Length: 332
Image 1 (cartoon, rainbow, N blue to C red):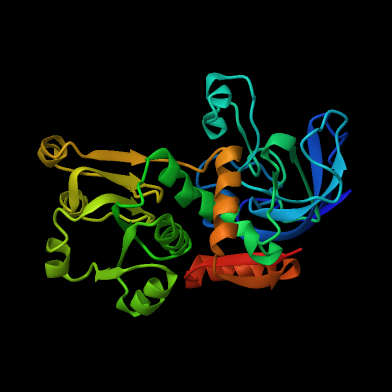
Image 2 (image 1 turned 180 degrees about the vertical axis):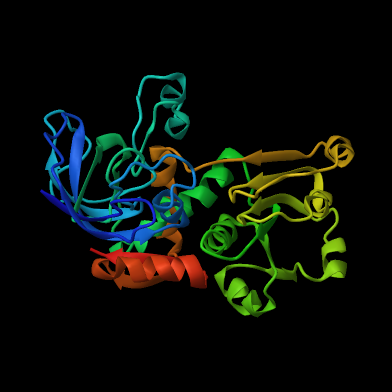
């Protein structure tokens, strides 16, 4: 039996829960969970904000642990190997998207916490292709957030073809944005942090920002016009998007990974400057591996706060009400 923490009914807190995972599939592995990140997506699923949640519900999709069991057809992993698991736990491996290397766009991809139990547990199961080995240089205690927050901001660097010579800006310096700053600085870009909180400037610069703009300053916002090749928005609030569109250079891109409630933009500047608006989810297994190798090479890591799994409700309450600046992790 797997020992986990689950929400039994909507509106309840998490409590100890056990379930039988059933027989191990030929291409599956069981991961003995050591750490699991706590993400806003876990909160959204706990509260069934997206209409996808099935109760009892075990959250957790930033899993770090060791391979405890392997199916008969597993060839990519071995027992005892240190691995991670993110938002997806399986994809079909035969559709045009999987065959093209964009497994995260597979229309039948299985979410690690959608319709099945996740990683707030001592064990979690997944298909071998989505279970990713972790480079030795990365500490297990901080690796979990790479598998959701990290890949969410790293994937568009690859997908959008961001160049080391680009002028880039990051909107929102929180759980996603603080990793975006690190990745983009190490990528070689000139990086500007955009935040409503001026007290974040010193830390944003330590994380990799060359410049900082307080977005409550109207004059500073206007001064950004025609400045950036690429802007990534990590926030989930509505902003005056026309200002950010105007901040792009010709052929610039405004890219969304934060789920803003609405998007209203003037079309003429988009057309006249041949600018692009786009968005992306997480990334493929290959891109996750590329991200981990890049992070290991440049000694990059998320900033985290640790809770024991037994204090999962306290961690979720902090995420819900205090809005910690970066990432929370459970020690399982």
